[in-house]
Amino acid sequence: MISETGVSKGIQNATYDEKWFSHVLLDSLNNDPAGKGQKVVAALTWMNNTSTTCGITSPSSYWIPVNGQAHDQDFIDFYDDSRTAFESDLSNMYNYNGHSYCSSASFDIDGDGWGWENSASCKVITE
Image 1 (spheres, helix red, strand yellow):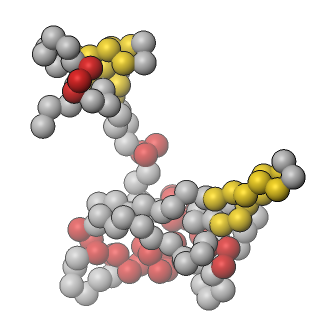
Image 2 (cartoon, rainbow, N blue to C red):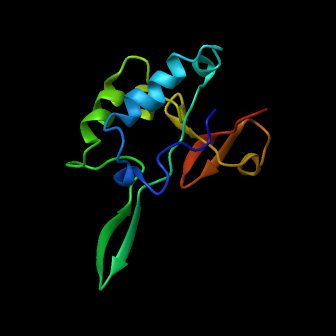
């Protein structure tokens, strides 16, 4: 897992390659001569940051480009690449037969593997 990836101080500051996601990130993982890059199961970016001045929220740092920035089409291409998977590609990632997973085993008060959280039944994850 890559716990944090991106351009220092935000993608809006990248001046060298408008294809950072496909050329720098994806190609480096898939073309790693040692083969370790292909074993990466997840890469996380920081969330896009905003600042508020005089009640107006405006972007200040981006790790995922927004529409109209130089890197936006490259990110779309990266998203659409068959070698990437995003949460929307992973069906039922956060549920068990239509039920959410509990955030804590403490919600299972009777030990049956099910709990009650946020006004709904939830499946307790056993490790």
